Length: 163
Image 1 (cartoon, rainbow, N blue to C red):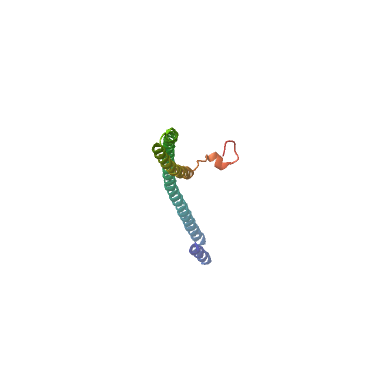
Image 2 (cartoon, one colour):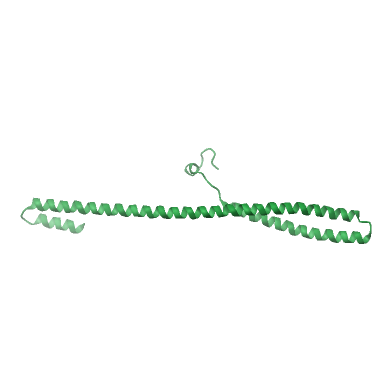
């Protein structure tokens, strides 16, 4: 650009046919400016395409992560439901053991039923710990799943129906 201005200045400073030289320099200057503008526009388009491509890739990766988190949350919830069923079954066994202790007529029966009841109580503590761990894991998976926010809520968080 500086070169063209220098050439134009020199051409104007020299004698001879200035109007032809001026027109020639002006035409060259115009072509150069057009070429620069076109190159800049091409660069901006290329940057926009690259940004869109990386945005699509990132969006796809985020969607895959979200789908994985949803699947993990569902699996964790299924485990919790299964453990809750086992707890109900265990409560029935515990109730039967308590009934056996109260119904026992001999000392041997009572001591055997008491040992069984103590064993079931230890198992109950372990079962409660497993249930709590599974619930914590399910809650964590649910939090990792995230929350989907509608675009209208992103634009205006105070809009009706937005969380």
